[in-house]
Image: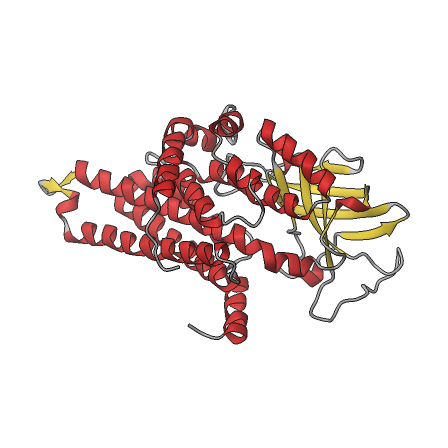
Length: 392
């Protein structure tokens, strides 16, 4: 469990993804950020590369998280927005394949063989944030399934998504009642549904402008009396909190891998800049302070990657990794902000004006500490898991 050296197969995977990212993503990353649009060819070329298919065609219980973190890190090195567009659907589609009824899962598997299928996730609301008890989107039972009502505010990739996984409160004992049955005061009583985005009553609002990851779509999505059949439910009714605890740790580990990729790119940019730039008659890399800042970046990248791999390995070997996923995401989110801020300062005005990619990386880094639970949430998870499982 503690051998963190890549296997021969993992090195081959890393090199293949690195070559794909260098050819198909890196040349277009800055233009995509400036234009606020993904490269038109990206989804098709990623599907043709066959990089994701092993994660979607294998048995659900096959170890996969360490490999997927290697892929995610390499894609994020080229462009964090593109990495999020390509890899978040892999996590969500795996979830659907595992929790959908067999006939619907078979249909999705056929679709995944033919193209890059985008599935989005809708949980965040403007007035609720991380307070699940304040969630306002509701699901009620109908004679033939469920009805969904309300608005989710910040959903990634939703405009390009074929379906969206929605977390809602309910269903209630009787349509129109206020009490959620079968839950404790600490359980918000959540249910997960998968909703086709072309369903009647689904509308996607104006895209939000974002600080970073400007190439991907982050938009509100509204559900006005959306009716779906009962086989659109994922898991049991009001078991959504359990689903979150069981499944979000995987994508949180992947988000931490994104941070490692961003920090590696920032480190390489300042290293190359320091080799070229001359000051006081010598290269910047001859200055001790400049060298030591890069050494600090390398130290923190190594620590963050080790935490990512620890979380991934624990999951792949069948252990509870919720605590490790939160530690990895918390530390990596802080690390990548320190690394990109240092890189911006080390480049001076060049790093501030956008003449270097560092300015984009600094903006992109901020999302790691926000998505899928901001830092206080993960501190709470870590402390709760410390009490439940014991300290290290």
